[in-house]
Image 1: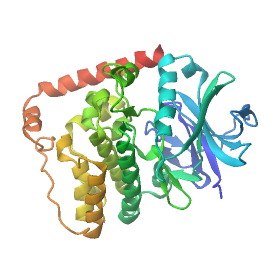
Image 2 (image 1 turned 90 degrees about the horizontal axis):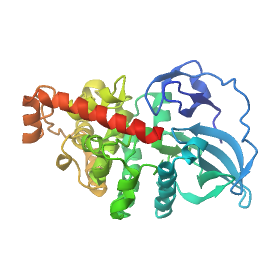
Image 3 (image 1 turned 135 degrees about the vertical axis):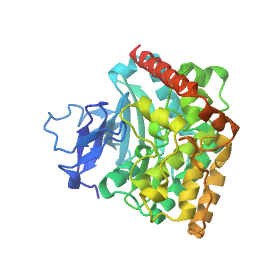
Image 4 (image 1 turned 30 degrees about the horizontal axis):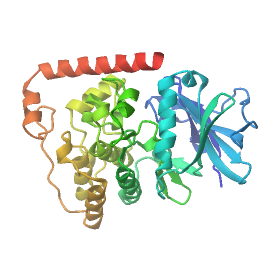
Length: 376
């Protein structure tokens, strides 16, 4: 049964997303840029694409839109089933790099078959439109659940994260790094089944040299700053499976606290915090979170990759242990001067005031690279 909801548009980043009817009149955070959006009933004209046929599917309603495309609910006529259809915008279709990235998403998705990953059925190019046809999940996202209900009980959050971690383990087994794990990219069905979505920024670790590097500019930041690991901010090309585990931990933190581990008015401010500051202690924000769960989440958010779980399978086992003995006290590093104590490199960085200046310059450079990449 589909819940009544309304399509909202964020004026800050131009993304579109659906919000449950019960949140009318309230303010929710845009799942893409985190700016607050007041939920209203759209008064705009009817979407002219609704009712049209594309790739053997009849478009039913617009579900949302992002920086490069739009997603519709559709009916696959031959199979008499509801599907989701993702299409590149006309502007994005004129950018060869974005077209290649979209085609790569289809290729990588075709390699994955797992109960906790959204399944892609088909892809194609018709009437000058690039499209993907995929499984329609009748439910919401983790971001939507937090917006609607606030911080999640740790038992529920842990169960959902175990599902997603198993999906990430399967994806890693295909030599794929997702690079954009966040609450808005994890769908939850009405039966409570979590499904990882959107491989638009994924890379294959065993691809030819020209593959990912051709689609990722030197210095360009790919991902969502509030959930990106420090190493992914520094160089998205070098993001490994361990970076995905950091993003899982940041998502887990958001579910438990109701807010991401780092927030700010701009992407630059958020990335600077990710690189330099420890997240607020979970138990300070939500005392009901058990010691073992909080300790596990903070371990996944370690600045140094080697101090996190090294595989998704290890993530699953450690989380299962924390759920089994939630009151076990876990020691966490003590911050010094605003920087987590995580090895000699972190301590050396804390001693040098030039590091902060260099970080700001690097972030400014990669943001400029992103701008020119998408502007051309």
